[in-house]
Length: 294
Length: 282
Image (cartoon, rainbow over all chains, first blue to last red; front, side):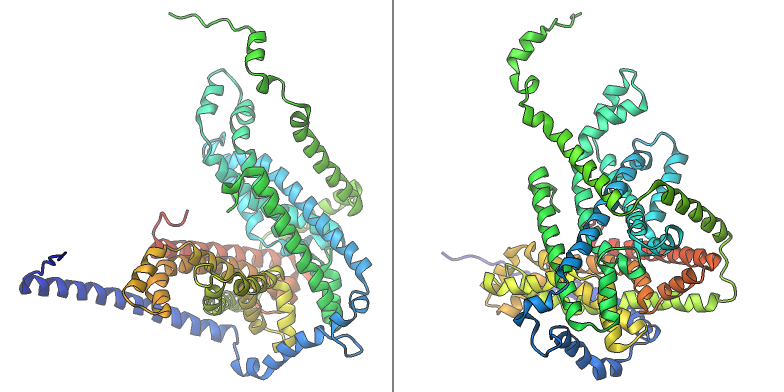
């Protein structure tokens, strides 16, 4: 079978070709301009950040040999030849890990409770008054933007050293992050049940309780679990500023050059984070079906 | 006009047994979960030394601190702070770019449609996962040991920890790409590299650009943190001022961070819309 390919007359073809070339040239020019601006920004940033490639190349061997050193026991053997010696402090470390998990759990739950209480005021469709929405939104924004560890630094001074400061820091940061996500879920909720309940003369509180909450709890729980996952990581470094958890041990080991301890603690942290990731992923899948896992 | 039909509860009960007589396990599941959650919460509060007296003492301390923060005042160190803020932004920009440049080739190795072999993909994925499992602050501490105190260590810390995140995100973007265009290139006789260059990259680059911009945004936040362990930027100033209890300077620094983050948010969301269009964001 033959297929007839129609070929346009020469003039028409030339015009089309010219238009095509012009369009491509314009796009290329824009891309080039973007690239030049980006390169300039990078150069400026490199000067600002005191990037010194010579230091990097001179010391890059240190980076590689650092891993070599943290994987070597004091007697010169590789760490995996003697697990008893490598993980000598496992009792203490497991206890600190437990504390870390507890910090993130309590912090996430308190944060979720506060976010739950506040999010209806921050959502466009359920907020009772515009000024209230404005205030609550700014409050959540503040809690979200200031990094958790900065809160921890301040709380360590106010509440004293220890896990309490870490819990409160994580709770505040989670309130901000979850409050925003929760209020977005509420904004996507169906408003017809609310109208139905309001038409029976119910108060604002009953509208929220019987029309909105049943629609949104699954989404809330999913986000709270995700937040817990993030908070475990966050809690593992809270100890850097004295706010409890395994970070304390890690920073001491790094600063005092207890090399094999560094790798042992890092290993326990990474394994814990893996386990938590997999468990919460599985839990979210079980609770809310595949589509809730994003 | 119709009158509402009288409903006999007993008849309804007989007709929908599933709704009225749920098994005890289904009815008790929710309260049991809540009780368990609260029990762990209370155990945690006790185990972590929470006591009301300590809490309220701390709260009143916090009240004093907030009072002392007003009004925010940089004193005479405004130029230093501005320079530190510039350093922070530089760290975020450079670190993210470095991470993206190195993550792109590796993400190809972790994508199912490029490397079909599970055996090859698995170690790459686990490698990326373990890099992500270690927090940026820890990487900063490690890099400080290598290149010394200062913002350069911060750049490298952000680059390494984002490398893990980007590797995963990029490979997911690549797996989500449409295979038809790749097949088209293959049908016209292109090599494997041609398939990637002309079939895949045009599809995934806008997505990747959006993600990189988003990370620059969120790294502005991370970059403020890593200064706390000595890796340069505004976090260094912040941690110092908190330690010497100069609360007015602290509040000024926090305000500066908030404004800078808001500005970066604004710029990058504009840029993202320009690159991938409004609907692709959601």
